[in-house]
Length: 162
Ligand code: RP5
Image 1 (tube, rainbow, N blue to C red):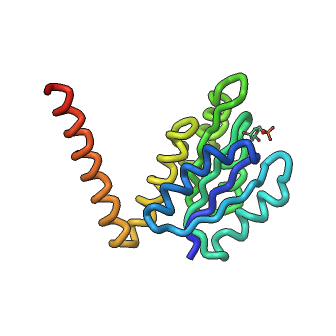
Image 2 (tube, rainbow, N blue to C red):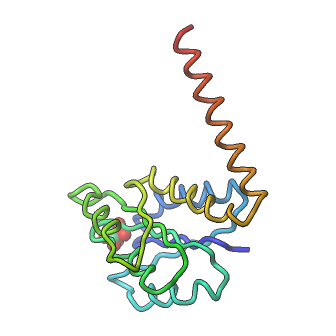
């Protein structure tokens, strides 16, 4: 069952957005990926968002660079939660995409995460947390993951002082 749609503005975004897919699949969540541009293929992007909920998707993750209207274009056409990942690569290093993603007008929200790969990773984790609201098995996996982080950081901390 595919629950999360990952969309990106260009094939040049694929390596970064693949990180989100990898995290979601590690937790056993079904994912699909699409290249859809808010500016180059606006009708296709709008149609994807419009149909996402009736197709059974629960969350859309949208990553794009430069003016990054993609997450906003998704949110404009669906009431599914949309998580926007601003991508770097432009002369402004993603600051342009960050502002375009985070500054949505009231009533059409986008949850904006960090620029680049960290953002892609956290977009996946945020999606998992939303899905875990109604999935105890997934909630347990997330709690285990957090516990593993505690153990890993503790081990590194101890090795610092040995
Ligand atoms: C955005 O413009 C894309 O999301 C990409 O990050 C950026 C550059 O696209 P390409 O020229 O590499 O296709 O729309």
